[in-house]
Length: 605
Ligand code: GCB
Image 1 (cartoon, rainbow, N blue to C red):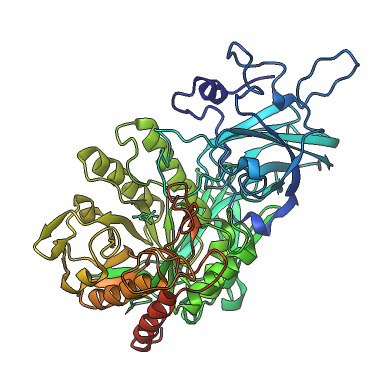
Image 2: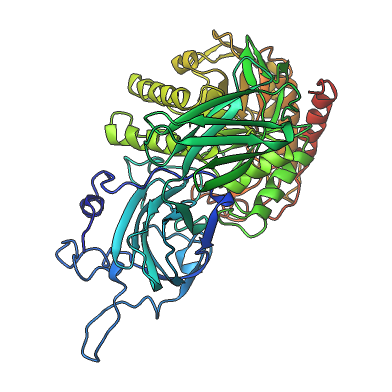
């Protein structure tokens, strides 16, 4: 068998170069013919990477675990067995499926056998919603691709590796944190490992619709434009785009890149908004391939300090959310998880959510589209990563590209965020500027932001003057007055300034409270402290003239290895407005009241 260079690099453990990268991402797989590989997978926990390397740390060429070998005679020496290994459920992190794996960071091998019948003229892709962090995919003993990054979707073509009848997939997943990774060694969330999202086979014709982007032309409210890209670069291929409800249909021809552009005038368009999250059925057809999607159309822009949705200024009443499962803990991955989390946001009176700190599963975005919640989408460029390392930048660029590629047709997403609380240095600003440029190059229809921090103070005035602010459309800022900094009442004296004539979203503020812990407002971790903090914060926020949105930290308590205090935290960050068991804390109602008052002053769109 042939190993990719990436495996060698895994073995070397210094940096990761993707030698057998995934195929270009197929978007909208939910509307394609798929064969689900979800369910129980045999799993081998391999803390020493024994399935990859021998005792001299040399790469195994013939007897690695990708082979899924089974003894043929009683004399055969095979020191592993997928068949005899217990299973883990896919999708799902491994940490919350077995108590022994709660803190595990290392390698787990996954195996699934299935019956498959190849069809003539049909290509097949193995599609993973996400695998945290590094993964190597193989089919019937052949490595088909590898991938770095724990929160984005990817796929490998497996047409040639599949055979009639019995087949098996073996996937190596390693979630060891790496200094040069994205994210890096330190995060304030659980490093859930494994095949955390859906795994499926996707069937497409020989030549298929690879990618598409439909949106309102920036600066207009009724002009739809976009492009469709085929899987190959043959020019002159016909592509038909239809939006039946608007009686729009157009056929266009591909150029030499296999891309066809089109535009429509849609005078009777009902634009997407939180109040009326209208989605249209869009059909794309080319040759024997046909795919549809539900897409909303809206504009988003900034003018001075204002954020305009469909041409009207509005306030983004938001809340930050981790991809953490309500009630059962662990990574969220189901449609129901999305419904519960976003349902709580709606109950708060929100029209906006910040999906922190990495791209969430596709259910979240599709649910936000349907429920009418604007979204801030982010990549895990978090805290202090290796700004000078070109491989780290390439990795971040890839994750950003994968994020935008998958989600660019979701009307709910109004902001791409290129990172969170990154320290201001020249190397970092250069790195972040490169990400901003990439995001703009891929999508010129949305706003770009990042969660910054206060850099300077002038007495009680906080100044948001991070040089990256010059490159952003919207300033994001995280602040913790009343938790890490001073007392809640210190917010009463705080004023805010920025040299940039741009809208500000206070992308984080908040404090911890253990649900059910009651006491005076000055008792740390009591619901009363958190409640008091939200009262002082909202009063302060009302005094910031250029504030146009808030996404306090955070909707629900979430697991974090950094939060150890027994009896209070127990490895949970307790800044949730709702506990991990769905109990609403007192501060929830403070924010709800504030948002309801704001909404009462907002025009209808
Ligand atoms: C932050 C981070 C967030 C943390 C939060 C906290 O500034 O952006 O990831 O979880 O503070 O609770 O300290």
